[in-house]
Length: 101
Image (cartoon, rainbow, N blue to C red; front, side):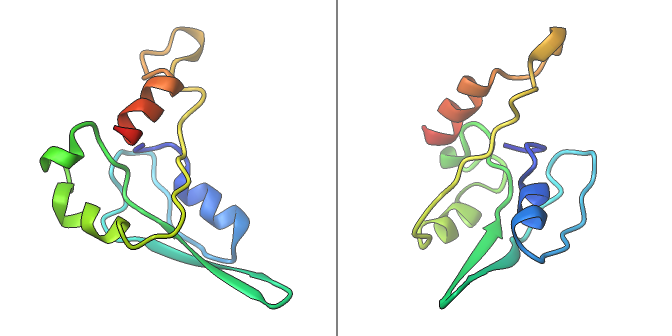
């Protein structure tokens, strides 16, 4: 989801230094980071936040979704605090549902 903390997570688990901003849709191209373990190296990408109906070509839509098809693992990042304490955000389970569908 937009503004869910994907860049922050990427920076925390790798040496990547993606710029962050307090506004939606800051990622237009993936930011890459490498996770290195003993003899294993994994490339991690912060992909743009997907919006509801992206599969119907909304937002970055099909132009970006085709790149995601090549990944081996997708990790969904949702904003757990989006609807806490009277905020008008989307509940985490609704965010996840929109990402999966």
